[in-house]
Length: 277
Ligand code: KIV
Image (cartoon, rainbow, N blue to C red):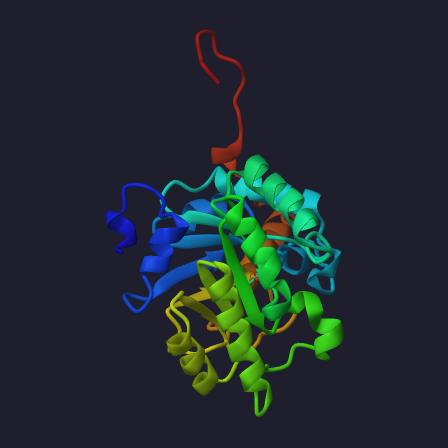
């Protein structure tokens, strides 16, 4: 599907149908202007719980709340017309069981107008995914490095090396069988990403999982160089907006202190009869 030729946002089934074709393009977004920038270039936009780290300065995604996701989801929805919006279920909003997950997923969908939710987990979340899908909520799964579980995964490590590969393949099959329309694979070795992509009939969306996946996603603040606290190996920086922004702010500060700003072109004259401004 060509994003520029599209007349309306794709549905989860359209994304599913892109398996094995032109790679699916996706980025995260948290605000209206960012969503507007990527709308015609992405097949889907994720309101990721990474918002907690990149916009709110939290040390991990664990402190992100439903209210934060609803607020950022509404903002992103205002900026999209061509791309589908997927929204993350935050930590603690779905793990208790299918009913809790449904309640919170329904709130995210109805208050933000998202087309689907994303949740983290494989075999352990299969029943919950099936419950949501059977009740009208499209689900994107997320396996491999699942940041909401960093405390049990032992940090932001590559997942699925050695014997752990079989577990991840089982996770991918479980979420596909449960009805997920796509699965994010985060930080897994290339060979395993290829095996999983072949093993399931839903698209794999890679982040640190090689070009063998059916699509790619990056955190937008990472690829624009706005989030600079650390840079994962899998991030390609397409711009250095953090550096450029600080340079601009320093120039503004110097101009103000030297009385170079505001200049004559920024100043209002005395009122003239009939003038509009
Ligand atoms: O929250 C997020 O940004 C994500 C992506 C890294 C896939 O889940």
